[in-house]
Image 1: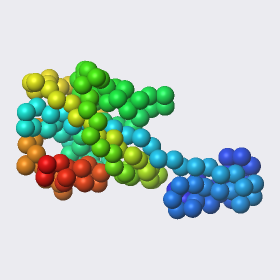
Image 2: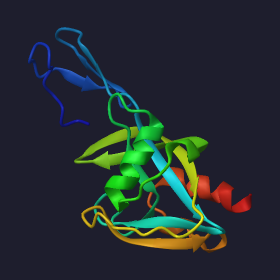
Image 3: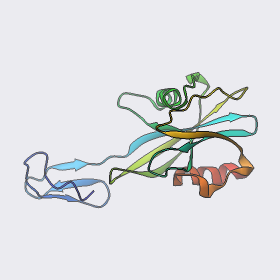
Image 4: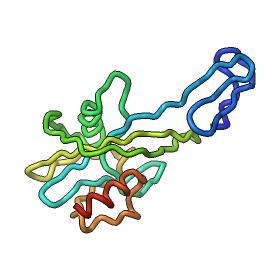
Length: 170
């Protein structure tokens, strides 16, 4: 966050990060907010198994993750679920069958910028295991796990670890 020093309004090297959500220019008093980014995570369920992906890029390369991603401008969370599942695994889902479960705060570091996110968890049940075509740039493999076999230390992101800690007990 400290890499951003020049005010986008006056150009002065006077931007100061407040450590949480905004930069302020001490020269012209311009304020630049770093708002929370929306993201989705989809639990694809078949019987007693859940589909995880293994990350093939940083952050957390090699760790387990749920399919999902950031909400684009002018896109609903459900539209994001549909888009991300198709982009990552060529899975076509019926948006009306997505079931909202919970939301949790999280952070995601990308190119030395720490983004605060609100992760929205959805469930999508399938009657048979899906045929998957992985986007190898993002995902190295797909793994079906029973909830009792989920190792929280293998999950990439804290919000998903917290979610599955509660989910495993339910």
